[in-house]
Image 1 (cartoon, rainbow, N blue to C red):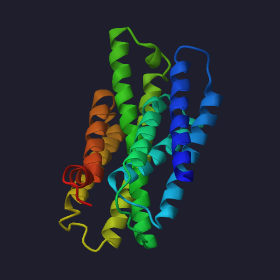
Image 2: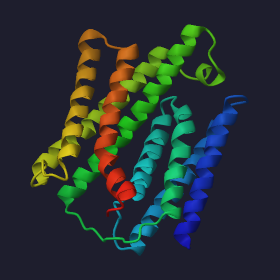
Image 3: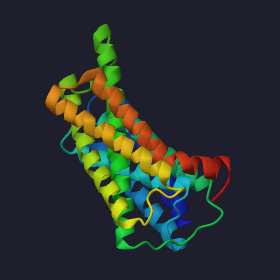
Image 4: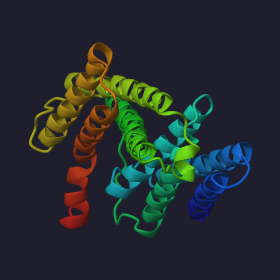
Length: 265
């Protein structure tokens, strides 16, 4: 009951924070109330995950449980970034997504929970993987928003949301910062995987490994191109989105097919 209550309150908090962000597009600034409600929402989300994990004596790495955990990580990273960067508008997408993932986990509980106890080596690999995905998810959203901003500024008819964003140059700078941090954790994830996982190219891991390496190559090339050749604009946007799609397929592709389509656990 406590887990259900915290889950529902967290969803309401996420939706309230989203409402305040949307309201901010048309009325006075309401940054402080938004931050308070958003932090309450992520705190309740974290408590919900902790209660469910404790109840079943282990975290269930199923599709919706993992998606809920990653969406929480993304929301927390966004709120940390908001403290010194004007990226709160990304919450219009991130907070409803987090509430959706948490809601799906609540209404579609898995039939079986398996208590999993990982060594510190595997825990490090899993943590760095989640951090990498979360940071690069924010970068992908930033890239999509940057594409819309660029298109509307070119048409000379920017909408309220676009006019409320920082200038294009500042948006691009924020994008590459997110990619840099994300690539750092992705590198750590791959490195710990090669060191601590006995056979990273085993049949059930090969697609994750290959797609993650391809994503790492794309993001690395993008940062090198930015540094040496001044890559920006559409080039940066396209490479960011391609890299994130590869990472998305690596992290969730097999889970989606096995658990939701083939119904295998």
